[in-house]
Length: 432
Image (cartoon, rainbow, N blue to C red; front, side, top):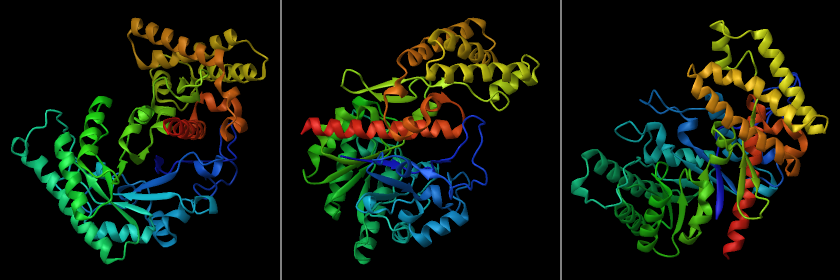
């Protein structure tokens, strides 16, 4: 089972100054930065997925999720995605580089933002090894398997559009001599309709299916979908899970013959999860363990703290002193020059301003502080970064556990990707 990371232009400044919190002198965005597969050995994933909607502005879609500038799009198509992503080193030669449409960007629209012909042309120009047919997301998944007649006109239309696009897409790929391996996108309103869609795609000639619409589903619902789908299709037909948000549960899905899946979850959780920000292999030897990153944001840049300053509740000078005291204590603790108890006190003395700046409910503030104190105390007690030998933890040490600035947070995300990738490989080895 291959793990693909969905590219969202996540790179870091390799020479970032953590003490002074600033980029390297004359640093150029992208050109002087490094991706996770450049920073970490081995690479923390088996391939990359790039969404067309992240690169190209779709006509008529004002709220498109474009992350690339026009110049970056032009360079990617001129040089090829593999070279642009610096994923062209010899060790990555046979790694998957998949393209999809990024259907979330146009989910609110009546039809997909790109035609099959546009998508095929884009995949060929970018040099992808694999490409998913343009789909239209159906978020409803009713486990009671309602009939087509019971569904809304919009849901039926999305199903038909996805199927029709898959047929046109495959015909175009055949006409071009199969410059990449095509995947037929599966969308449906129920396990039965998704199985029906998958069988139809097989009959069209697809041997690799991309299962969409899984993002909002609970783990038990995903099991039902995959079980129903796998029973309906040929055993040799390959399956890819699109945007698999339940990546931490992947060990529960090894029985469905999944060939690949993509996820951003390990990296995103580094800075968006309320408590599980740092992944590490469990000391018991089974599964993963998670720790809370220690939040010491920049006093004069954090939104909550700035609101408190503007309202006259906090003093910027006082906050900056507490901020530096917390950072100094944590770095001293890492060197063995400070106790966990005093470090925790310094961190929480600063953290309470974050809580007070976000809520005027005193009882809630006390609950939030008590909860965070317990989580941070556990992080300090176990100091998980000290027992990790990945490139990130070895190079930056305690900075990886500090929730502060993109360069720290994304490095922690890179670390998470590496730990998760190793966990996946071990899981697959144990199931063989």
